[in-house]
Amino acid sequence: MHAFRHLLGMRGVRPLLIASSFPRLAYAMVSLSIFFLVEDATGNLGYAGLAVGVSSALGALTAGPRGLLVDRYGQTLPILVMTPAYALSCLALAFFAHSVPTAIVLAGLVGVCAPPINLSIRPLWQELVGAEHVRTAYSLDSAWMNMIQLIGPVLATAIALRVSPTVAIVTVGGCMLVGGLLLAINPHSRAWVPEARHEGEHGLMRSPAMRLMGLEAVAMGLSMGFVTIGIPALATEQGRQGSTGWLLAAGGLGAIIGTAWAGARAKHVAPAPGLRMSTLLYAIALVPLPFLPIGPAMFVVLLVAYAFLGPAHVYYLETIDIVRPRGTAVAALGSLWMIEGAATGVGNAIGGSVAQSWGPHLTLALGCVAVIGSPLVLTVGLRSVLRPAMRPPITPQVPRVNDLSA
Image 1 (cartoon, rainbow, N blue to C red):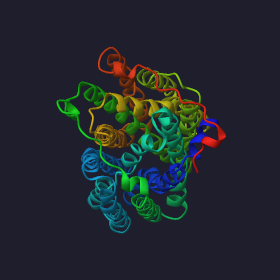
Image 2 (image 1 turned 90 degrees about the horizontal axis):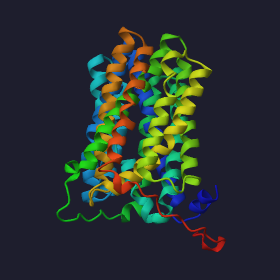
Image 3 (image 1 turned 45 degrees about the vertical axis):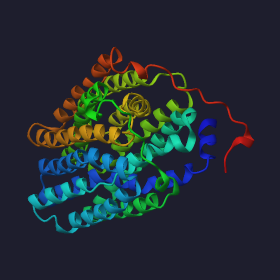
Image 4 (image 1 turned 90 degrees about the vertical axis):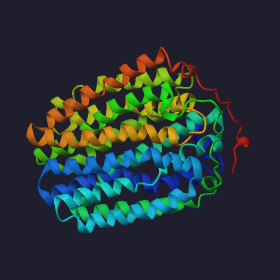
């Protein structure tokens, strides 16, 4: 943990983590808040899954354009415009979702207005900590984000079931408003300058490496969509809705463990092979999920599976940094998240219908099948377009105490 303590001593690191916390809590709460709101209004799991899917898909489909805006105009203007728009769309969903069409349209509006928070935070780390500490920074940021994702589902479930789904959605909008404004006034975010493009290099999605990573995003997104709808659907079917937040939080806890290990111990693992191995182990660990009832065994399976998936996020960010075209520091990740998020939305929508018609266990089984595509695609890439990401990162120097920045 010495590497993390050193990083937290650097100027700008803690304020950035604090600014990121509120919008990430909003993102961690929004899907379950929408699910419970629409399910409460309609009494139908399929409509609830469709609303979450539409919101996720539209949020994802606009992630690429949002990334392009940040690469062109910087971070401050897009955040200042989209943050209040997101908060207002949450209020509209909370108070005007009286019918199925209205609920689905307003849920979609929430997705469209999502500010580019995580897209903006990622490129700041290299400037704050330098290339030799960027893996540790990605690990710290991912662990922090996963800790918030652990809290978010529990909080959303508690508010939705013990107070009301309306209050849960309003809380989402409030968190986004506070966090977005904090990031917009952060001096490092305001000073960030978009990366210069290289003449003669492939366009973003004309890059063979980016197209391959897009295929990987489809497989992972579909799996996530099925799993994140299958779990609350199964809990609802078994009359244990209150367990939903804790089960999804198990994934966050496992991811924290995995990302902490990647930042503190996995110093010599090359990004692309590390990504392939992490997703393969995640796919294997997820196999028992469709055969389990809501309870401790499912909690353990999710904990272990996400402990393998946690390092994948760190290796993923490093791999993209290496293989993407220059001048696309934000748009590259935004475009891949657009693909993955759209696939997640499709998985949500299909998964809700499958759960309604054939049962949530089949939805979870589809999630286990879909994720196998991720390590298969990466195996192909390791032999071709991902070769530049097969070298270990720069090993950081051990700092002296008096080297720590204030």
